[in-house]
Image 1: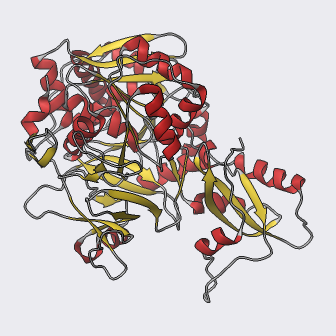
Image 2 (image 1 turned 60 degrees about the vertical axis):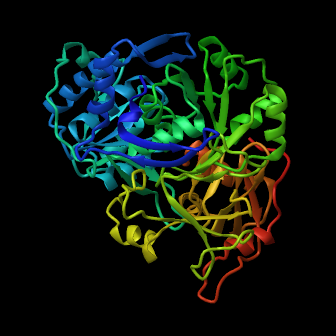
Length: 553
C-alpha cells in the first residue's frame, strides 16, 4: 500500500523522471494517525520494520504492531503529564522502541527531540537545559543512563526519566509499563504547522542549534524515498544511521513508510563492513543508503554479491570518484548522491531517471525553487561558485523547510534574509543544469558522516593548561572525508613534542563525543587574524600542513 498518493500530486516526464511535485497536506495532518494508523487499518499485516542486532535477536513488526505499541506508549506519556507541547528527548540508539516512542509523541502533539548515545554529560546537559525537556527516554546501554542522570542533576527543574528493556535505578521501565497500558487512544488534534520534531545541529560560532520541524515535514520525504532512494512498495530499505541524527528521519521512517517500504534496522555499535552486506543478503534489502565513509570501507574490504539490492544512494559528505567507480565495478550499481541539511529535506539529488555525471549532486528537487547566488546576491551563471539558496514558493506549502531555531528568532530571521533561505553551502551548476558541491562557506567540519562545529571542540581544547590559543579545522582524510585537526599556540613554559601532542589529544577526547575527537595536532607560533583579532580559518588551512591518504584512529 503506497499511501503517499493521498498526499501529493506528481507530474512525470515521458522517461518516468519527476517533472513536478506538489504536496497535499491537510490542515490537521498527523503522521501517526494519518499514515501509520491508516495503513494499520487498510493492511494491518503490512511489514513496517525488520529489526535485528549483533546478539542474533530479530523482530518483525507490522503496521498493526506500530499502531498498538505507539498507542500504549502515548497513554503512558499522557498518564505522566506528557501532553501536547511537552518536550521529550529520545536517546534510543537503533532500538525498535524508538519507532514506538516517536510515533507516540507525534500522536499526542509533544515535541520529539532525538539525540545520540555518543554524546557526553555536558552535551546532554546543554540539550536538556536549552530545550527545557520534560522527559527523557533512554537506552540502558553505552552508559547513557549514568550520563543522563549526571546531566539532569545539573538542571534546575524536574525531568521525568524512562528507560527500556531492563530496570535501571532512577528510571521507570517503559517496556514493562507497555504490558499494562491500553491500546486505545483518543486522537489529539494537531495542526500541520505545529512543532513536531527537533534536532540539534552544529554551529560554527557557538553551541548546537535546535532545528524545529512541523507536522508537514514527513510529507516532503516522499521525494527522498521514492525518487532518490528508490524505495519500493513492499520493498525493504536500509539506511545506516543512528536515530539521534536527522538522517534517520530521511531513511528510517517517514518517506519509506509513506511509499509502502519497510525499513531494515540493524542495531549495532561497532561498524563491520562485511556484516552490513550479510544483513542485506539475509533479509533481502532492496535499497540501501549510507554516508561515503561506509562505502569507502566497503570497497576496501570487498563486497560479496548482493542480488536483492537494486539501488544505492549516499549523502553527508563528498564522495570520492574512486569509491564511486569501485562500487560500480563491484556491484553494477551507480551510487546516487543527494544533498540536504538538518534544516531541510532533500534539496538536490541524482533522481530516478536523471542522467548525471560522476561527482554531480544531480538536479534540484521540484519541491523547491533553488538558485546558486553569487556574492552580490545575484543568480550565478553556469560554472560560477555561489551559495545554495531556497526561494520560498508563495503558492505552495514549503514542507520540509524548518520552521524555527529554538529560542533564537534572530538567527532564524538571518537565515531567511532577503526573502530566501541561505544554506551556507557552496555549489555551482553546469550548462546542463547539474549541480556540484564545493563545501561550506562557514567552518563546519564533516567527518565520518557527522557535522562538527569547531567551537564545540575548541571550547574543550582551550581548557588544557598548555593551550593559550587554538583553532580547529577539517583536513582531508581518505576514510572519514575530513579529520579534525587542532592548531595550537602554546603557553609560556611549554614546547612542542609528541608527548605533549598525545597528552592534549587524550585530555580533550575524554571530554568529547567520539565523532568530535581531535585526530591531529599542529603547534603554530601564531594564528592568522583579522584587524579585529578574529582567527581567519581559511588562511589557517593554507598555513598548516594538510593530512591526506591515510587515517589515524
